Length: 216
Image 1 (cartoon, rainbow, N blue to C red):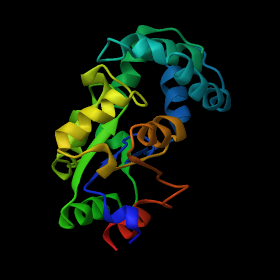
Image 2: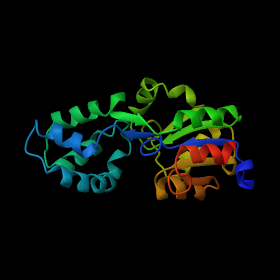
Image 3: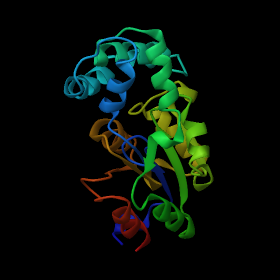
């Protein structure tokens, strides 16, 4: 265990792209649903546009726990189909626990962190569906605190959402390791408040790497 790892008293985990991965290609799911409501872009184009649309429309998430305006804009841009029923269908689809798979080794890692006496939190930019999804996947008991942006009206990398979770976990920022898949939102966001930002793949090579780093 490194000297910095020995100072860690709590760990926070990002959700999308870190703890939870899509069970199927998101572009494929968008394309299938969009075909029922119009003539969508080809699947490959949806895959290319989707991350750009999600980044471009982030401001629409502010002040809306459901992210409704955001999802309308993202779905229309990505699929080329503007239909309220399509947005409703996709929001419902990705609220289903079957739409997600838990990252390899995540359950075992979370158990090991708790067994070592570390506090464990979840810190995610996600709308208000996430709490129910975690419960349906039987993940909620693995966490001592949840900080979900849709509920709080704050998003990573805003330091206030990190500070909120630190307070909920009862630790100073210097004693927190935050793990995510986004270099700006997760790693730089955590580093900016004095926490230890770790990229789930680049720095850890998955949850087994996190377990080895903090549990030995």
